[in-house]
Image (cartoon, rainbow, N blue to C red; front, side, top):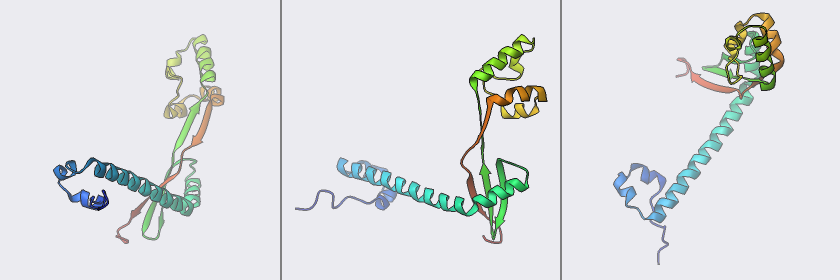
Length: 163
C-alpha cells in the first residue's frame, strides 16, 4: 500500500499548476503544502536576518563614521564600497514624557498662551516643529524628551560600473 502523501505535489510544482487543480487537491495535501509554504517563508526570513546581520556588521562602523562626518547622529548617509553604494539609515525615535508635557501645557496655558501652538492634544510633539521653536520653549520641554535610535538598515545598490 502506498504512503498517503507520496504523490502530493511539491511547492515548485504547485507554483505552476492552474488554481483549479490546486483547489482539487486532497485536503491533506493542501494542509501539508500550506505547512511547507509557511516553513519556506520562515526559512527565508531567517536567511534574510542572517544576511542583514552580516551586512550590518560589515557597514555599521562606516555608517557611524559617515554620519559623524556629516554632523548627524541619525538619518541616512551614503558611501561607496567598490561598485556598491551603501545607504545606511539610522532612524530617530523620539519619545516624550507625558506627565511633563501635561504640566508644561498647563504652564503655557497659565501664562496666557495657547498650548495648541506647541503640542498636539495627545501630548506628542512633532520633531520638526520642536526644532523650530524658540529656545526658551525648547529648553522647557527638553526634560520631557527622550531620543532613541531605531535599528540601522542598509540598502545595497549596484552602481553602473558593477551592473
